Image (cartoon, rainbow, N blue to C red; front, top):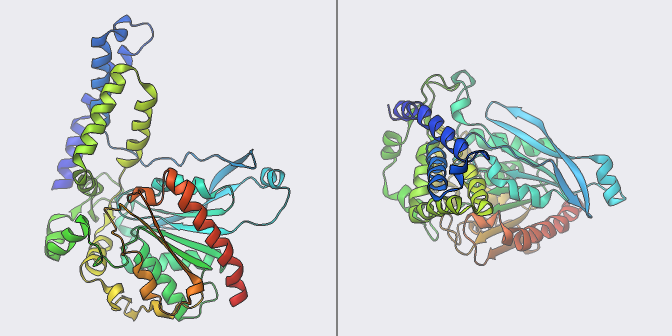
Length: 421
C-alpha cells in the first residue's frame, strides 16, 4: 500500500511539476524583462527548487567519454561484457589507437574490477572512482539492476546469488584481475574469494581491496549498525518490505524501496540537506550559476535510488548486521561453509575513512583477522584522515591519497601473484 501511495503521489504531482517548469522557463527566457527583477529571480528559483524536490530521479548516465593520458585525450566507450537479469558487467574500453599514441607502448594495464554497492544508489555513484583509475587501468564495474525493473519471471535474488555473481565475474576476467569492493559488497565479495581459495580455483584474483566495508559491524558501531541490532528482524520484514505496483516492469515483486533507503540517508544528516537546498535557492536568486550547478550535479546522483529485492535486503540485515555470520565464522553459501582463512595468495588491502559514519573504524580492518592465512607481505591497511564514508572512494583526498596507494599496491602485488602460483 505504501509503494502504491508513493506512486500515486508522484503521478499526482506531475501537472504541478510541469507548471513549475513552465514558470521557470518563462521567467528565464532572454526576452522576458521580469526575469531580471528580484521578484522574477525569486519565483524562478522557487519553481526550480519545487521541481527538484518532487521529481523521481532517473538512473544517471556515466558521462565518461574520454580520459587524459600523458596530456592526450583518449576516447572511452562503455561495453557490457557479461550480463544476467540482476547485473551487467561494464567495461570502460579505451580507444586502442589513441592509447597507443599516448603511451608509445602496447603494454597492457592492470585490470581492476569494482564491485559497486547494491544498497540503494546506482553504480554511477562511483563515477569519480572509475575516472581516477581509467588513465592507467582496464576498468570493469558491476551495474546492479533496480529490483523495480526486474520482472518477477526472472526469479529471486539474495545474498548467495550476489556471491555467485561476483565469483562468475572474477572467473571471466581471470587471475590477473584486482577486485575492489566498495562498502556493502565487502562481505559477499570476501565470501566469493574465500570459496575460490577453498576450491584452489585458478581464476582467483591477484588482490582484493575492501573500502569502508561492513566486514564486522560489531566494531565501532555506527547509527545504522545500532539500528539494525536494536530492531528485531520481524520489524524490518514487517515495515520495510513492500510490493512494486503496476505498471513497473517488476510489478508484484517484494522489495525494499529505494525511497525508504533515501529517507534514512537524508534523516542521518537532515540539517545539512536542508541547508544545502536553502543555499541552492539563494544561489539561484543571486545568479551564482556555478554553485547551483554543483548542487544539481551532486543531488541528481544522490537522489537517484534503486529498489532492493526482499530476499537480498533481509538476508543482508540478518547475516551481516544482526548475526555477523562472516565475522563469527558461521557464514555459509548454499549450505557450504565460507572460510576466509583459506586465502593464502590473494593480497589484501583495506581502506577506511577517519570520519566514516556508515562503516566505523575497524569494521573493514576485520578482514585481516579473518584472512589469517595471509603473510604480512600480502597485507596493507590504510586509514585516510579527514574523510567520511563518501570520501573513501570519491573526492579530492581519494584522488590525491587513496587511489595512488591502491594503484601502487595493485602493481606490486599483481606481478608477485602470478609468480606465487
